[in-house]
Length: 118
Length: 109
Image (cartoon, rainbow over all chains, first blue to last red; front, side, top):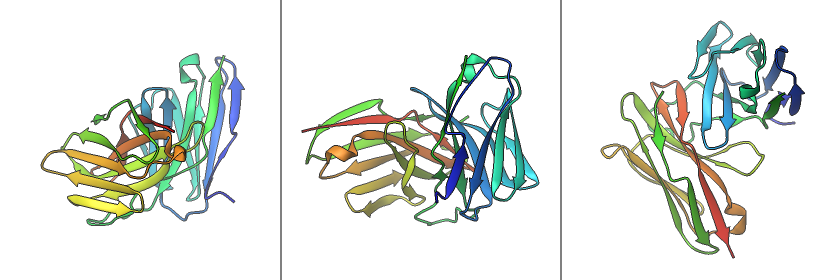
């Protein structure tokens, strides 16, 4: 089984609909993130959470909300989807210790959700 | 947000060496990571540098110079399977990474 699982893998939805993207992880990591990827723009941070009671906005949080239901689960919602939210969405996790001199601190990404809003 | 600069595309031949550069903003900077992403796939972690110098992992190496706000990914003995996009990502304030726009590497026979 994948360490970070995203559902659904693909979704087409209509403008104005509410949609939830889900992420679960078996890494045991405290930190979870939602990123959006658009062609030519790299990955941009939507929201992140360092534990169940901690939620923080990223660069592009407008139009999105999140819920950290448990240490292993972090969901992203689009309250009223619009076409410019069409993108590839990635969930990522990391542990909590980017200590000085560490050589392997980074994210583990899920396989992504391709969302199309029509 | 913090901006990172990297070339949009690089082309090289099989067996060659290629270097992908990345510059970043220094305020709050803590470390630099590199990720590989094949078309339609998830980014996968390649390396992380928190200290100046070169880190080598097989055919891939990553370098960081804090004084120059600069790093690079070096890919040696290129193979066709290395054709992918490569992203640098800078860690700021111990808590989140900002990503560059990615460099598409085309490896030709």
